[in-house]
Length: 240
Image 1 (cartoon, helix red, strand yellow):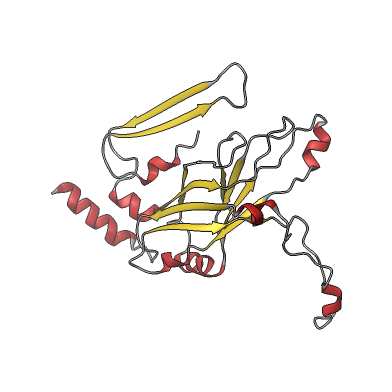
Image 2: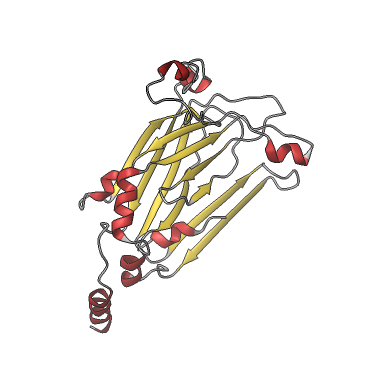
């Protein structure tokens, strides 16, 4: 259960719901958990210092689903610019997967200059796994590779001071598992590159028009944090 979304909350008497449906076990069909809090876990000072960034992986739609029993449930993995990631819950094989999976990354501890550079030069991604199969042999299961899809997004707009929330949509393309290494070829040798296939033209993701939707929010603009100044402001407001 991912409870990191409570780090973004600012209201008192909040509620976090978690739902589990008909997967992973045969004995347990449904499990609903509700978490309540009187006050937000982060006060005003810590919220500014840790600067929580919330990612809501809303859905993946027009998914090429498989109804054969050999296929595992569908899930997705979100990867942030610094390498951190989170995984959604499993969903039944279906055309529209409404994950609504929220996760909070704390970015305030990162150097603000480095964070800005990563946001400007790197992408975040959603890997859609809808073709994974059950394999009885444990050793074979560890090395097995299945076709998957990948959607790419940029959080570059967070570099603007007035941008604290974004709703993004991206098409899902086939994930290229094995990168082609042409370092031994001459840069001008285009003949050696003719055999590369960067995108499968007949991929089900392209035929169905599969896409992913993400909503993301950040607590404050990305900038240097003046700890002494912010601490003094917080104590002044707390004592008044």
